[in-house]
Amino acid sequence: MRGNQLILLSIFVLILHACSSGTKMLEKGDYDNAFYTAVKRLKSNPTHAKAKHTLTASYDLAVQNHLRKIEQAKLAITPFKWDEVVYNYEDLNNIGASLESCPSCMNTVGRPRFYDTELNDARYKAAEERYVAANKLMLERNRESAKVAYRYYELADYFIPKYKDVRTKLDEAYYAAAIKVVVYPVQVNSNLYKLSNDYFQSQLDGFMANYETKNFVMFFRPEDAKRQKVQADHLMYLSFDDFVVGQTYVKERVEEIKKENVLVGYTDQKRPVYSTVKARLSIFDKSISSGGLLDMSIIDARTNRPLHQQKMPGTFVWQDSWAAYTGDERALSKEQLAMCRKKEVMPPPPQTLFLEFTKPIYSQTVNAINGFYNRY
Image (cartoon, rainbow, N blue to C red; front, side):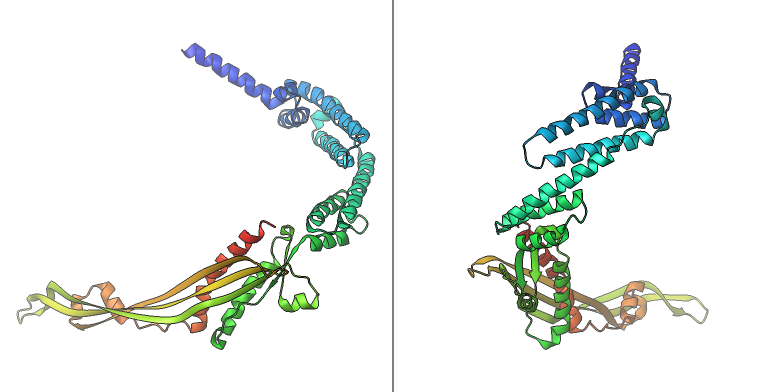
């Protein structure tokens, strides 16, 4: 049994040794990863013979493989062939940079060749190809084509940063592709809660302003939409169907407390006197409940057709407790006595209570907006 274990261990070590040098990857035709694995191995062990062998074979094969792909792409008649050319030249340069970072590797295969001139030429051709295709899509004047055009302009900007007027084109494509949503302010019919509601509104405004850019959704205030002459796709209305602030409940609990064998004094002979002491404890629990229901409605601006409606509840309960007693305080525990010494706390002002119950409503509203507009 022990002999079999040693054999298995030896096989495992050999496999691990082969994989760590990239030999298995080389045999499977994964030349790039075989090369990078051999480089990593030689950085930690510059004299590793198997890794040197793998490096020599994989480097030549990887370079020839990328050059072959480049020639095939150049001869192809498929659209966006220059993307493939760019990516392969980038891979070749990455191989060269990895080789330069390993002195023992260069001693093995020599200094690498870099393809900067060829890569720059391919980048310009790839950028132009995407740019021209995006311009054609924009002429179709529909949202789906504009979304694709936006992606093409992004690629053009990746290949050659600030290529021609691509940054302006990106803005134009995004605007054409985006759903424009006019969001009407949250309505609350009370001047008392105006400041708290304004804060809730500002939180929503901040969320919408920082909404994920590539979701192709834009939110506008009514006044901004009017000034910018936005043709709205959706109208969003937010209003509190109902809310109550400061519903107060006070509950009293009375406990008759008795404690036996309590030291109550001493005799004339200074002997301790023990007796039973009693107290009547009244515990007051005060809660102030506030809550509301926000309605979110989204309608099609062109057809007036309802697209989505959701109601989001929120509650907040403020609580306080204190106590009072009559009788002998020695009957009370330390905790009970502390409650009796505690004064009734003034509750937060109504504006704060309003703000507190809107916090869970805000979270629900954000999730609802995300959930609905993720499909766009």
